[in-house]
Amino acid sequence: MSMEKFIKPFPLTDITTPRNGAEVLLDNYWLTKDGMYFKSKRGGTHQCNRDKRVVDKVYAELLSSGYECTHIPVAYIKRG
Image (cartoon, rainbow, N blue to C red; front, side):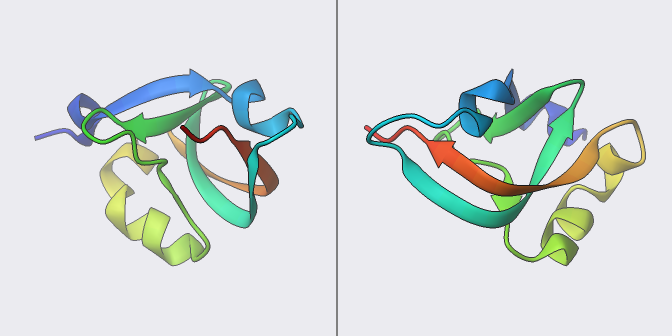
């Protein structure tokens, strides 16, 4: 079963553009593809981790089919 059915894409600019009131996540590795980052469909959890090995392990199948594990030094997360 592919993990793709559990994730939803969003433009990387949503988290790489500074904005007032955003929560800042520093030095995380994100699941990305074609200028998009991903959240889980259920719960909306951002698909990132401070430890690259976690992203590499959890998403090994997707990473072998064109997805990337991208280091984003500063991400601006809208909460609420």
